[in-house]
Image (cartoon, rainbow, N blue to C red; front, side):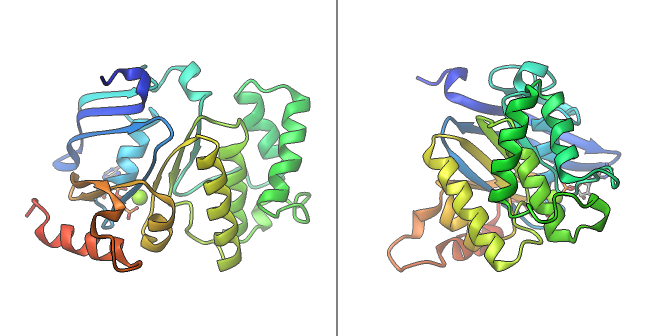
Length: 246
Ligand SMILES: Nc1ncnc2c1ncn2[C@@H]1O[C@H](COP(=O)(O)OP(=O)(O)OP(=O)(O)O)[C@@H](O)[C@H]1O
Ligand SMILES: [Mg+2]
């Protein structure tokens, strides 16, 4: 029996238009508790638009979005998610500590928890040495790391990440992959968009593949199992070619 309690989020018949353009077209998709799903698709397929609707940043033009059974704009549901945007525009004069203190405050965390959590996370994303510098002096990958720390600060039940691997150097990428695996093993639910098929294959139970606003595949990654890796790339190409959408 499927009830809302088993779902982290549920999109039913969701569309979003920008003028004449249907960025997301009749999308029905859900994420179960403890599930890790990769959100794939070509540039402009509607991934970021979907993610923004999921967390209540923009409204759908049709359909319903439920986050933990509620409207995504509810403050109580927001406190349970960690969100990392595709492009973060942080206040350039803040340090990463100040950034995290600010977000922690917004999430209603107390100062002591914020401090302990910040120390842990700065270690995890290896920003301890740069912690006193303003964010405007950070490289792209360093900003990405600051974004990861921000998304994890409130120890969320559900992580929604928009291209979290972009800009990370190979070591940081391995480190972040392991961090996500640890969270997955602790029962966290994770939904992330990516163009990194290798990373997605290593982390995910399921993938959803978007093309021109429609979901053309939603299912397990290991459907073509048996020949040792590279499966997702083949699945991706095959699905995009057949694609259901012309
Ligand atoms: N605010 C907006 N105004 C007008 N069009 C928009 C807006 N946001 C998105 N779009 C359009 O909607 C479509 C989907 O964009 P979206 O950012 O969701 O794609 P994406 O799958 O995240 O792509 P990418 O892989 O490049 O990040 C694109 O055609 C884009 O130009
Ligand atoms: Mg995007």
